[in-house]
Amino acid sequence: MSTLKQLCLAIFLLLLIATSSQLAATAKPMPDIEFSSNPVHGLYNFVQGIAGGPGGTSRSLTEIFEQSDYNNQTYRQIIERFREVNLSYDYAFSEEVAHRHNKRQITELLVMASSQAKDIDDFAQRIMGLLTNADLMIVIETLKAYEPIYQELIWLPAYQRFQKDIVNLNKRAKEIGFAEQFVVASKFYNANWKADLPFKVYLAPIPVENGYTTATPQGNIISYITTYISDPDSVLAVVFHELAHLLYANQPMEFQGEMENAFLDSDSYHKAHAYQLLNESLATAVGNGWFYKNSKGILDENDWYHSRFINQQAKSIYELVELYLSTGKTLDLQFIDKYIKQYAQNFPKGYLEPDSFLANVSFLAHKDFKEHNKLFQVFFQHQKSVRSLNVQTPFFDEKAMYKFNSAINAKMALITENHQETLEGLFEYYPGLEQAEFPEGEFVLHSLLPDGTMLLVVSINSLDSFGKAMQAIKKQKVLDRYIRVLKL
Image 1 (tube, rainbow, N blue to C red):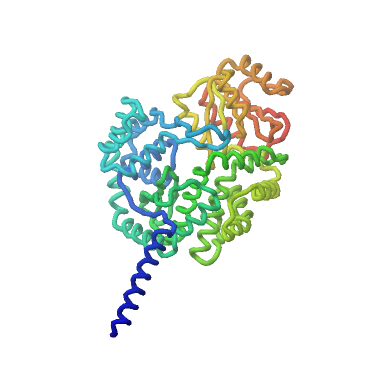
Image 2: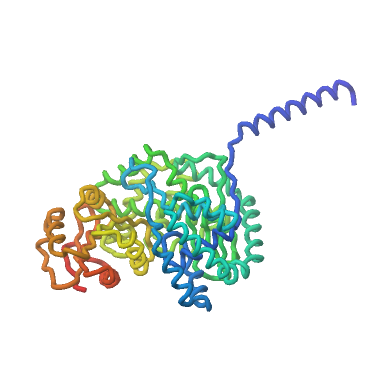
């Protein structure tokens, strides 16, 4: 080769290297997605499920335990003690946007800590200070008592198959460009997300082919309790669904405020209920719809979500969501307006259906009922689809009443003492209730408020009767919009 040709080749290679370096430097960073498992994480969810506590737990795991020889008096007493621990309190990142749930529950922090703990003692160190020392001891003692049970019934039977599933998921995520699709979704949501911050998906096994799976997002991790995986694309769609929730939670506060005002300023009677479905409907349309279609080449013909309200709303807004994603558009006021109109068309009486409005409830109560645990346990037995719950106490406290009255959730006033006095006090807040005919004994009064939310006054002798009240409400598939009383 001549000297001139060698020189030209050298210059070409230098230019190529320089160009490649420049492209690498300017290329948009992509978030990594990593699937793994941790027995401490699985154990914590296992115990939470048996206790019936808050958080993403699987009924299938609980059923495996209940059908085993370990479901005896000794272990029931241990779990009963665990139930007394308050894991339902939370703290707010911000209250600038009143009706967005910019909060973190303590149980979510425990899930995050469990996913990264080396063992139970390391888990204890990680959560020190989140609970009182007495409660921390109960949690750790319960986990240690149940660890051999979890290993025998769940972890060891599933281990070999489950590790292969994890390898397949990591491989498939790269094949279909999971990270690239996340970048597109991030722009759609207008989310504040550091592109090089990795996502970690911690899977906990259910050692069966079919069962109740569940996935919940916390911070930059997703806790996913799943059966053996036969279709990685379906699992990745669920994961993308959960990542969409994280994007929704990480929208700038100013943008969140604009979106919320678009709902609250609407003249639609359906605005509150449409808003309550927004997060889940978008995540379903994006993850189970758009992402799944990109992976498989076709839309999933099955239901996308177990709630008919979310399933129908997500499918009906899918074309609009796909248009925004494919054209690089961000959520805007025009989208919200079309979304509300679609909700009203889908569910003309949604605000009167208990299955719908009980998914988001604000309670008002005299006391905490052991930090709400017993109240929530009974509520979950009768209402399977729940997106948000909170409890304000006591009655007629200025701060509690403000939060209760200003909520756009269904409002449930739970009267368990000083019945007549408390009822008369509510008449001042909700004029017109005094016109109802109140029966002797326990009852539920319901009335649709002017903002389209449902007010339920539950008057019972003790919390033991709350299950009867829930049955009476759920028995009415569609409530009357006027003041009515159900005798228990």
